[in-house]
Length: 122
Image 1 (cartoon, rainbow, N blue to C red):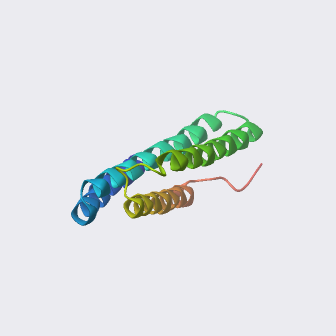
Image 2 (cartoon, rainbow, N blue to C red):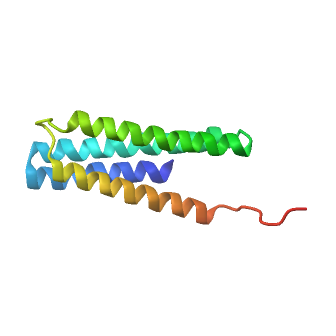
């Protein structure tokens, strides 16, 4: 959760600053919206893994897959709703989302690589 907070903060500060310098308030709003999307999607991932860890293996995979499907549906609906919004700059929002996706994948990979998973059964 700490790394995700750093990611969202970095997207908000760097993306918002660059968006404001290049595109004005539309760029700032777009980058902040991209940071909010990163926070929301990361929270769904964190919560689904946390709650899924308390379930049997089938329940874990079902909950994580359900969270992933929920993110896909919400992402599609939010893009449809924001398609004609005048306060959004498409390129700034796109780059903020790309940074959120790549940063989230990097965090997930780091956490998996640093986890201690036993590979020998009794």
